[in-house]
Length: 158
Image (tube, helix red, strand yellow):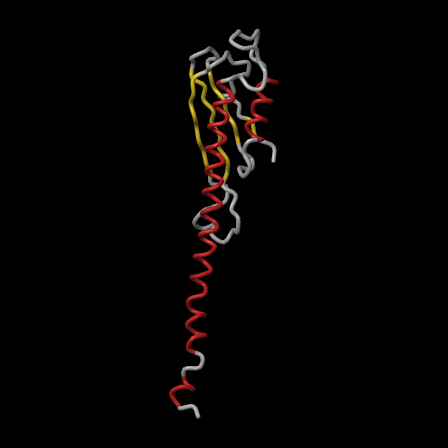
């Protein structure tokens, strides 16, 4: 037979769970959201590093160690397309390239992309569209066949 005290505590665990559950859900989605944004940030940094390396070696085409006749916009588009293809999570990334074009001159690749939230639950803490940006500078190993894009940036296709 149940006592009076035991019957009064029947719903206590349910009430305690109802009070704690929203905090647990917020914590779980917070971990997921921050991990997603961290992965996007790593992707932007990787894109800038790869872009600077590809620019330094005059990827994807170009004669080795000979000065090209002109710096070509088609070569630039091919280079930006290759940089974009090496990024997985950064949607609508913007790529900028800069260099004087000679061997030993610095080449700079800058990649920026807006944050794309995963769940949308924490948009108050990580607003969608907040920019992630990374810039990497590396010395040119070959003469640049791509055109300087410091004033014009190119957006990666989605």
